[in-house]
Amino acid sequence: MKSFLKYTLATIVGIVVVNVALFFILIGFAGAMIGLSQQTYDVKDNTILHLTFSESIPDRASANPLGNFNPLTMSTSKPTGLNQILAQIKQAKTDSRICGIYLDINDILSNFGGLATIDEIRAALLDFKESGKFIYSYSLMGYSQKSYYLACVADSVFVNPESTLQLAGLSATVSFYKETLEKLGVRPEIFRVGKFKSAVEPFTSMEMSDANREQMQRYLSSQWGNMVAGISDARGISAQRINELVDNFKIYTTKEFVQEGFFDGAIYKHEMIEKLKRACGLTAEEDLRMASLSEYAQGNVPEVSTATDKVAVIFAEGNIGVQQGGGGIGPDLAETIRQAREDKDVKAIVLRVNSGGGSALTSDIIWKEVQLAAREKVLIASMGNVAASGGYYISCAADTIMAEPTTLTGSIGIFGLTMSGEELIKDKIGLATSTVKTNEHSDFGGGYPLPIPVSDRPMTEYEKGVMQAHIEQGYDTFLSRVSEGRGMSKEDVHEIAQGRVWTGEDAMKIGLVDVFGGLEDAVRLAAEKAGLENYRIAELPAQKNPFELILNNLSASVKENVLRTELGGWYEWYQNHKALLTTQGVMARIPYDIVFN
Image (tube, rainbow, N blue to C red):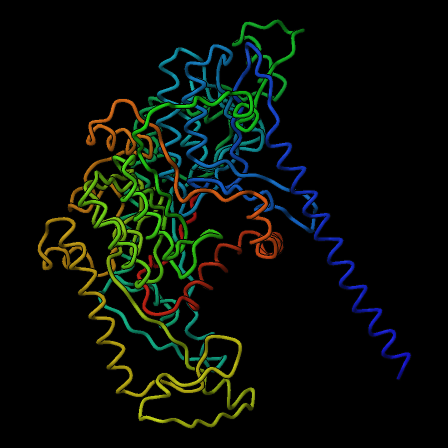
């Protein structure tokens, strides 16, 4: 017994010592990263701004040094936020040290397909071209349709001779789990309003409903139409010809794409480097100087504005839930909006929304503060890739709603989803439960004896009626919020609501969006409406001290990156379904995520 206790104690002490040591190693590692991020970079004359977009592009990147630390590979990557990308391209336009931009891209990652993000970067690059400086694009491994949509704005587009562009149009595939759940002994309990609220279809059906197919066909066609129009305008290829090539699908060679006008040449990397040297006026013997976005940012001394007046840009990105941070939106965002409203120096607010929704309760809490702020100050809602369902809920009280034609929005509707697993729990696992209660409905919905969101019994008909009435009341409230904010009757809102997803292009036609534009356009519009000429931008919520972020989110950051490494492309699917099954209360959420190639 003494030996057992001795070894047990030694093991416990050893575990504690190792964990403490690892903690301080990670703190030291993070400190080193912070130090590196604060270093300056010497941007010399004839430098090319090198854009790769190899990481996912959020609207604003986290300041957490361990946010993208992968403990399996002991490596880290730091995404660059869209706000930083736009700012650096704008800076490079007038920077005499920068002779041009080199787009070195294969694919571009961002939530819900990322087409609105690409539209904003395209607009920034088109503005950069007005300086007379060059933009060259090259892909070593081949362009995706999405990356080519961005690349085509370049003066010249090149590709590796053995790489190509798979031009096939857009498609969407939905997986259905009804029979899977039946085999597991789990039955979904669904409550919804509106024929288009299809977020629950995968759990109740084995095929797509006609209504869902209709909306998906419409917004895919709209998205593809915008991509084709952008390529046609940039490359001088008719939209008809582009679609002919797509409809006559095959793996076209680079030579064929050059002949059709998609590429200006099929060349190897060393030839691309020679072209870049000539564009900068360098000889073959001189070294080519290229700076990444992060390096270029370190080489710029930020301008310190002395303006007192501020335009607050408030970022609302991720699923809407019960906690702020970690890629999600919580009730704390309402407090941020309130503080901006009460700050006398803040003359206008831009609410930047990039969310497919989530908790209806949290959405309403945030909506109220948006409404109050819009009564006192100019408030512009700027929609990113997606501002749908709960994302539209928190936007609808703004003075003006701005979106890109490719933004996914609408999805005005709510639903409730619970899972009952009596067969799984009792028949397959052999787990029995007994209940004691003080009132008739104290055990509303049943109990949850397993560490998964599955109850031990189905809802009674009475309970289903209670839930359906609650959902319908929530939908009526959502209609009222939109009706008041958009100056429409509830009947007219209902006609375009019922959970239907719209693109920004179509949303403009039906009154859900006021004007097209990106984040920088929204800031300019906010300043103009507030009568501001000299102002500074305050980005909110304020980023925490990096060390504070480490202490608060160390385990979460490590866990997230382990999952990302192991699940790969399935990570976003896992996160979306986890949010769908664990969000408390009724949900106002877009039916699915979107991935475009």
